[in-house]
Image 1 (cartoon, rainbow, N blue to C red):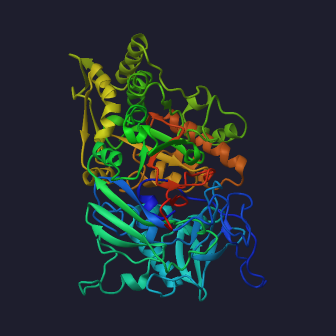
Image 2: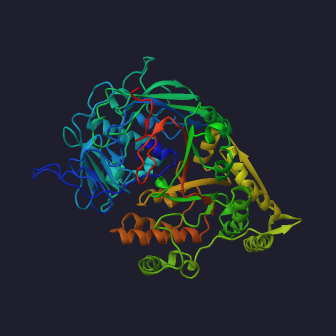
Length: 612
């Protein structure tokens, strides 16, 4: 995926396989037009455009979007700093994802990709017509520079590309990546999502006459090869992108009917409520509502009633994503290392009461790390999943074979009291006891404390009942809400007791699992192993997931991984929706049939004012 998407935490690595060759020379590599998951690509050589676009969509108009917090860099490589929204608009990647297939990508900067049967390497052949905004060609040297600097300077990419050991120029337009392992069919695909940067631009002097430094943050408007350019920047406040008339790739099949807005503006707000007021007033055009109660109650105003604002609930983008939204205790803190403590904390969370009082009963409880997908485990393990677990039986909790995972159930005073008693008993087994209405260590007398770190005040309402329940069993619990920059820095350095996390999983779990739950990422700052998991059984299952040979083996192995993660009580599962809720001013259009796996905004929407 593009590096900007790696930063948000958002998830999108894809596996490669099959397509028709574009080279007829027997002595040359057999190039494919794209990569797909364990089967054929939907689109074949010569396709005109993706099915979900309007090829005649007009170009023009603009869209005003909101973002929370602030930004202090435009550099797309670095993990430090708070990057601006939308920088992916100015850069092309080697391949481009198709939103009507679960895990397929097609050539963008690269006209083809080739790899041997053992997937020990991958060759990308660049398009001869690919150009930077200054008119110079995109070269293999640019790709190699981008790969090496990304891997060097970004810890997420260091993990993501850990098994890609070398990139070299092997032809006038060819770049070959070499791997230190065989059979990992995901590697060519994730390399296809590499953000490619202009080496000559970064190695030249900037407007101040001094050499640019890719290892530092910058607010200088960057140059790319993509469809948009940065037209203005107000540091920390707003950024504007404008469509390039001279974009080299606008007529490629993967781009036809896309990139339709003439300008895209991101305006930053420090408070979510203020941002929504800006939307209500028309200063912002589009709003994605992540609060069920807000969606139900907050649209009682004229523009929403008379149709000037449209509202839609769409399942598309969640069809290909498994979600785990959870409160996550940090096992790097000694008091959270005991599994009984983590399980006890889950008994105090009363989802049913929260759903009733705050969300009109419209929330759904998450009960899997792959919630909403075929990979979610349930019941007891059977068939191939059972075989996988038996192969590492000495490394996984015995309970995975005998006890299905289930979240505690509350919702009324009696159930709540029963759950509190179970929590107190688990704490006692782990060496913590109630003394004078305080939960303390039985040996040292040290009180048990929990500080829940949040990055948005809008989250407080959903966790205050949990904090109050923790206090009811003697835990010194509190919430600390900090600004965006401080929150990002504390997350990257694992400086927290507990945080609110959302992990997104694709329908092809693979290499990213090591960054989420693997031992190698537990102490690597900047990883997404927020819980601090370092477990040999989990590591074995991650390896099996990565090297699964077919769909059936992949599904069985991911279910086994899900089951073991749940059994360790690493997280406290919360809730999630089954639709994406959007509201927008009636100035845009889209096809009635959106991409099956995406809402397609803003990529395939267009402005009603375009061309007028």
